[in-house]
Image 1: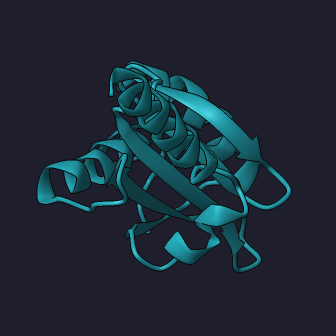
Image 2: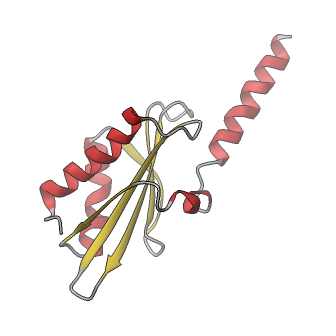
Image 3: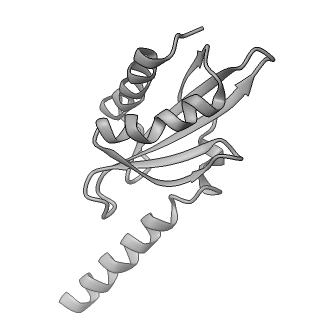
Amino acid sequence: MHRRAFLALIAGTGALAACSTLSDVASDRGTGVIVSYAAPFDQVWAALPELLKELGMRVTKDDMAGGVMLAEEGSGFGTGVHTVIFVERIGTRGNCRVEVVSKGTFGVNLSSITEGAKLVHDRLAQRFRKL
């Protein structure tokens, strides 16, 4: 009995870890908090890892060419909050748009988790002017 429970736990943890790949997060685009900044893509992208660290998160994956960064808050064993950040260039004046989507481990988007998106944007706004 205990062996089955242990194996189910291991399988569940593996399934949750597999849900946090860069290709899996494309469906999250358009569901988060979006803010535009009067700052170049490269500067915003470079500021994100330190900013996330200040908020107690760690970057788990990133794709600068695709403008997608994944971060995790918590123990790192599938028990924390997963945050997806989309950064894209807008216009020709060197501005960018940042979308932050925060979800619980099981894909639940609760109001307390949505506060994570607000915190990220608050930190960005301290460094870059909002449009």
